[in-house]
Length: 114
Length: 114
Image (cartoon, rainbow over all chains, first blue to last red; front, side):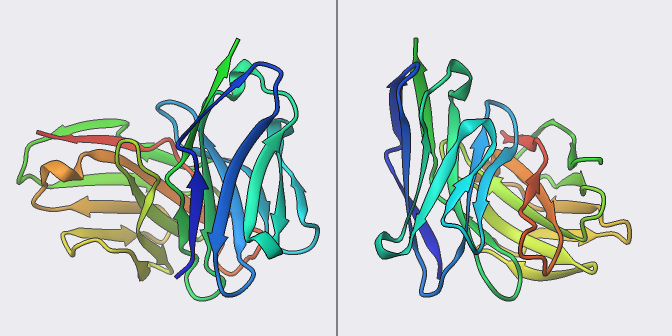
């Protein structure tokens, strides 16, 4: 079964500092990987996705992630944090065949300090 | 383009009761999935519907059931409610078989079981 592990349930950064949220996946074949963001009392919004092709993926709101097969990682980064980035971030993996079940990590809550 | 909409937004039920949650998928999407998100956790896959049939199920008991209608809208039914069923229930839609089609989520229904 495919799974993702998010390292760090809470991350705090200063406004303007680099954001790095870590995600490692477990899969016997190259997976489809996603990052979602969830603001309080809302559903999940897609930030970016990796399916095939370029390993550096750019998403919305200045976020990007790099797929590293050798490290089985898909870490999310943003060069400069904004207050509006405070939210919970979920890494997810989707199965390749059959039905399109998506498995989520436990989430990382990002706090941005002014 | 109409996004995923869910109703109601909040619901309070008593243990042992039954509940029905509703979801309208994003226009052009033919597949609906339901997820349960307990407080402080990532979303957990309940099941998925495609062509009005359940074609994938997570680790949830049979008292969780669903329907998909010809217009691709969906219902989640939970019988014999338990306190642990208190959670945010998220509906997501996508296009079956399309690699680049991620899940699009609604804002969820917050269910409280007392």
